[in-house]
Amino acid sequence: MDLTDKQQQQLSLAKCARQRCNEWIFRDVPSDITIEVSGGSFSLHKFPLVSRSGRIRKLVAEHRDSDISRVELLNLPGGAEAFELAAKFCYGINFEITSTNVAQLCCVSDYLEMTEEFSKDNLGSRTEEYLESIVCKNLEMCVEVLQQCENLLPLADELRVVSRCIDAIASKACAEQIASSFSRLEYSSSGRLHMNRQAKSEGDWWIEDLSVLRVDLYQKVITAMKCRGVRPESIGASLVNYAQKELTKKSSLWNPSSQAKVDLLSGSNGHEKLVVETIVSLLPIEKLAVPITFLFGLLRSAVMLDCTISCRLDLERRIGSQLDIATLDDLLIPSFRHAGDTLFDVDTVHRILVNFSQQDDSEDDMDDASVFESDSPHSPSQTALFKVAKLVDNYLAEIAPDANLKLPKFMVIADVLPTHARTVHDGLYRAIDIYLKAHQNLSELDRKKLSKLIDFQKLSQEAGAHAAQNERLPLQSIVQVLYFEQIRLRNSLSCSYGDDDPKPTHQSWRISSGALSAAMSPRDNYASLRRENRELKLELARLRMRLNDLEKEHVCMKRDMEKSNSRKFMSSFSKKIGKLSFFGHSSSRGSSSPSKHSHRTDSKVIERTCASTE
Image (cartoon, rainbow, N blue to C red; front, side, top):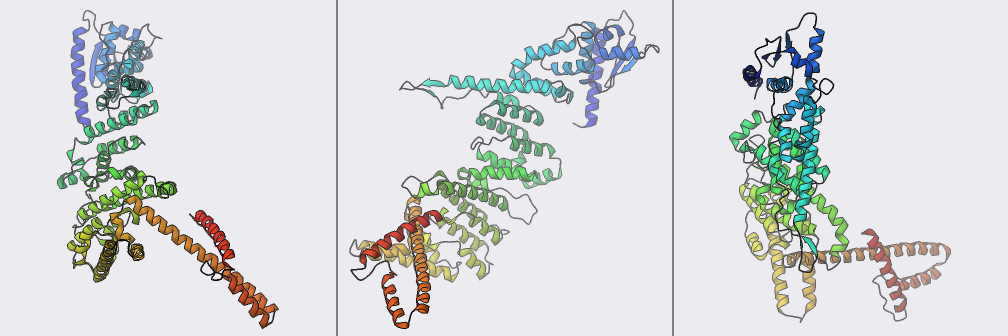
């Protein structure tokens, strides 16, 4: 509603109020003062007004000599309609104070100074009593009063009408939830008291009532509820309901089309932008307080409405922390930039994946030793990693046919997750094959870069057979596929002979451990990789210690060479060579015991070194 419409509405209200005033004012005494309010005029009498209103009394007293007959009340809160009620009160005419007019009466009584100082039981005290004893004890009435306060700010805020209603709403909602929780308590078969999770909670009936508030007042109410301890799930449900009512007024915000997108970007979208930024700032910090689909919907709106960077980054961080429950449709965020850009917003998805990977790394650092060095089940973060890897592969396959999708953007999405996230590379191979098919003008160098993302040892038998005949792959990649397929065939043949020659089978498994990873469970596969890594670290530590021993012996030999003649030096050299054990054992029986003792000592030192390194 623009300024002209508001002025016309005020004039219409003033005219109606003036007509009603002529009905109830007594006419046997001629009026001696005219009050002008919001373009309307009221022909009244001084005595009833000055007996109740301190402001009108002062105006009349200031112009006593000139016998003032016309007074204009500028910026009177509530306009002519509110002044009519105040004038009725001055004339002693009864009317009902309700939740729809109490806020106006509070403000107009303050403006006209209708306090106990000028008259007993004045309008100010009457409205305060009604507000405290009636309105603040009823949540619905508090919401109605807040709606009326929208046009009375900032005076309604200064008179604490807004704050008292907000505190009452928060307290009432919290009390309702506590009562609802007690109603769901029941005794189990063992006689213990527990909460019935399946019973529907009826303490959130206020959610629908709050959706009628203006966004600034709604923000204050939700903030007060958080401070009072209202459940995050209830806060989240209220935010979802409010967003659906405010943002779906323009359906293109949640299901945008190209024409609607142009209209929104060129028109006024200040209200929708404010709503999105406010809702994001009110989101609970707890995970799963709101559905992840709702978070993606907010993110789409934030991108399209060009909300603040902090707003979008906050949404990306929240989505990244629970990306394992997202779906492919959630990730397909349309691109709202110029026409030459990709169909989907790949950059936003990349930032979400980076957030997920960083979170996974931090959790993995804390739980690494306890999870993968024992036989306990793998951590939730590891399970989430496998789910997200599958989701990313499906996303890559969906965006791969886009002709505007550049190779660096495709590769950065494919390579954002750690190497152990994919136990099978079939999904990644499928996505890369689709990209190669849609971008046939790629150079041979780019094809090689793209193929390096695939671990051909982790392809299933069907995917490996397809890759071996795929002419879109570089020749080097096809050779690798054929090589690993040959190793897999050799392993299967070796296993068919039973235990006749177990050693070659073990050696070939060490070579193609990645190829067998698809057949192993994720926990066993990762545990075996960890064991191999530990063995390599131990061997490296042994070699370093042997090298240190050789360096020390070299220094001693140089010192002996300088002090003794060649014959003594050769004798000393032969003895020292006999003491060294390059391979951890000695061929002579007499030196076997010291060698074993030295090996055990080295092993203990090596294990302590590896433990400190890890």
